[in-house]
Image (tube, rainbow, N blue to C red; front, side, top):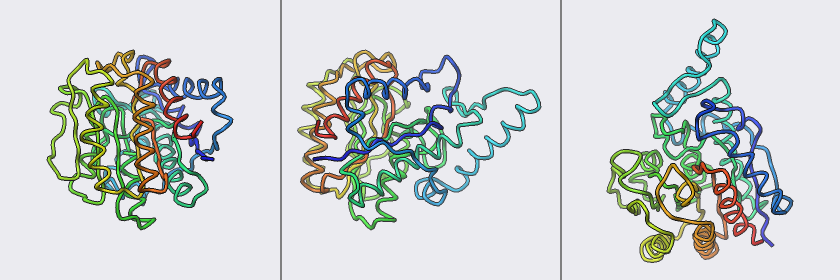
Length: 317
């Protein structure tokens, strides 16, 4: 029987960017409540994430970027003590509060700890219910609600610390994972496969034509069956040829038809199907080793229902 890890931490609830912001702590509450009410949570191995070591974050990010996030946090604490604002803007959509640094360390730490546990055989696979998300975080730039790129860090970590030769990153968020692309483009050890709405945020979509990227831009109002066909035709042959020894998932659920931050038409059953295909590739080539990290998903009900289906497949429930 599968043993699926569920990595999270209370610090991930403390990061917030304002009451108006869709990337809110209530996202994790909704997921937890859905998994609990469905009976799935009691089947999972729940673990709290330690902070990621800075040396491991720097496998994917420049040292100055990491230092700048810490420096902005320290400066904000001083400003608040002097009566200043409670947040520091990083870009028009993204800000940090005094808890963001620790939350970001825990989010990356969850991905690393999940990788260690799955590689050790303690867990078959793992889902990281963490925030802030990561896939827009470039090597040297925070943007799009993201500070550190949790999945890219974990993928680089698996290669550097566990000696794997080939891994895959699968990104099914409605937005293109430009940060992940920035970090992994040209690294033939990592195959990145994604679909995303285009044109959409981030402006310009994919910027690289590197051979290790499998980008599937789709227009607004694309439905799940069309996405499934593209995955069958394009993703799966490339994944089979790559033979990844571990699969990392940027699990964004904002391509759901009920999510106002995107205009795609996926439903829960589509996430079930996508996860089944991922698990089949992992079973054939990676001893079932999958680590999935939460990215987007902003309609709380649709998010919670979709995560339940994703995790249910991972747990074999």
